[in-house]
Image (cartoon, rainbow, N blue to C red; front, side, top):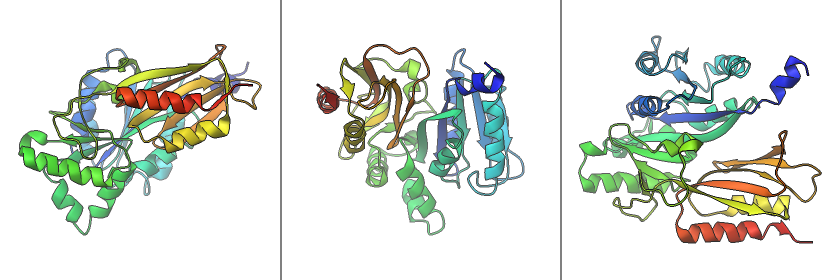
Length: 321
């Protein structure tokens, strides 16, 4: 097998985009993740709004693998340089086990994720957006920046409410309510001093249900709800209907962070990889050695009833004859 063919079968690099408006606490969150990464090889691509990338200097204290992109919005004025940087990372002989892109405060993290996914060397694991609990009310009303902040919140697969130690309980709940009205995800976590559940970043940290940790909020819930990120799996000896499977993941109302698996589908002679994140559903041929059954792992903030509902929905996709 030549080098190009060998590179083509290497597993994709998990990609996490970390967004949020200026001063929302992105670098603090990122340094917490890097401080708890253990022996994992984590690369960080940092875009700062200015000629000198201060964020990169702060992050380099935690990892040597930092790529700088200065001067403005990562998804427009330096889009070409972002693509170049991603190509170089994907072509490394020893790839990182995770790439985190810390976006500038004035950029749209969804557009960044879309640029990253142009290269099949990467697999989107999440778009995490930090929201400043102290300033979010005023920021949303700002005629100049309110729109980009609304887009950042709406595009997130998980939201992190930061600086909650600086506000009253009433103001914290008001901030959570404001964010929930704009969010398309029901995964909203509270962070203290940059601490977030590592399950948002590293799959290896996800424990089977139930795990307590991280403050999880959904619309209408109070801030003392403490159900954390967890996972469960679905297995089937039957083939699954591709169209029905897509419909299930498009229509699920449970707080799903991501799903992944290896599935046998009705019209395919070989197994397929399944990846679901942020409403995106990707099904591609699986190049490894498959098991005889289909297996899907789901990661999110699930109640017992959520798990039963999802399993019933997935069972409905089975081709029984």
